[in-house]
Amino acid sequence: MGREEMRALQSERLRKTVRTCYEKVPFYKRKMDELGVKPEDIQTVDDVIKLPFTTKYDLRDEYPYGLQAVPMSEVKRIHASSGTTGKPVVGTYTQNDLDMWAECVARVLAVGDVGPGDVVQVSYGYGLFTGGLGAHDGAAKLGAVQLPTSAGNSEKQIMLMQDMGTTAICCTPSYGLHLAEVIEKNKVPAENLKLRVGFFGAEPWTWGIRRELEAKLHIKAIDIYGLTEMCGPGVGGECQYQDGTHLWEDFFLPEIVNPDTLEPVAPGEVGELVITSLCKEAMPILRYRTRDLTSLNYEPCKCGRTAVRMGKVLGRSDDMLIIRGVNVFPSQIETVLTEFPAFTPQYFITVDRKGNEDTFDLDVELREEFFSPNPGKQMPFIKPLYDRLVSLTGIKPNIHILPPNTIQRSTGKAKHVNDKRDFRNWMEGK
Image (cartoon, rainbow, N blue to C red):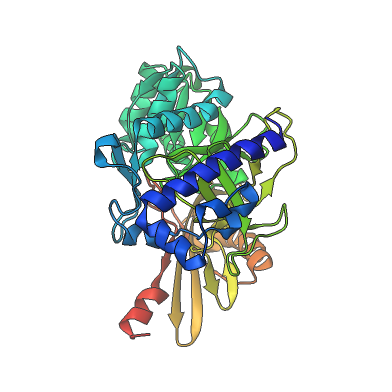
């Protein structure tokens, strides 16, 4: 679909969504009235900047059904975010919403030629988390076999992968790496696996992690993007050229704004991704601040798709660490680690404050063939990593080398940071 045709479709769907929000969701009527905006003021996609933003705090404040636009008699499913603190972010779905979601995921899986006869091992968590059932329904739409293993029990996952002839896997990149380690540890012969493609999402990951996944699992590693507030996985996905994530603009209208001023940035510039749902019935969302920092590329893609391409998510505006006045993203650490073959991609950051100075401790693992408990033999590995991190971030880390498989692996979203300063500030009443 050409750009003008896409804009016309988006404008039509945006007008309908805005009117629904204004007439059926008291939260949005109040927000729009505060801004002096009426549904008739929104005629094209260019008018989206007149609308109020929505944040995860709004969704939590309106928990559970305050943003719902349909009666419960029309709701077919409820999902919620995987957050561990406070009230979760809830998403409700009509049957049309579920059908649209399956279509979105199917578009991404189709990149890996998934179809009838393929066995898709869904190793995202099932339940309230959107990953498991989202990938499951997308595979079903393409006529593939669904193998709903969920997350965890890795030894059994590998057994089923061999016995059931898994050809595609869906999971977080961190869990994919963990499965690769289990396969290597158990010396599973490559010929025992039919795996050819993986769809990884739910957490940011770098090109270094991609190379590791592709080399160890002998697959094509495809990025699938999503968020509970829109539907779950499937808001977008990579094509075979892996040159940006195509966002399905016929269902979701993306913007990039400056996270501080909330003003639009110039095309191609990095900022915070904001998304408006264009077809959701149960819980339509206007201008949702994803907190993901990225950019948009509207140039035609070599694959022939005209859907806008989102650059790799560089980090989250709310995950950014400010250490000694310097902005540091965990993804920067991951990128550097994958430059050094002696290290595994596993890491854990601890930030604290001693006196008036921030401390930055980094736990990393050497691969088994390089590890020695002798500190003197570790120094040749620490020095180049230290120099590279200082060059990139300007921060001098305290690097601690741990034995292989020491850092806790995750079956879901990986946790990489412990910022103790927040706790200390709370204890000190700051």
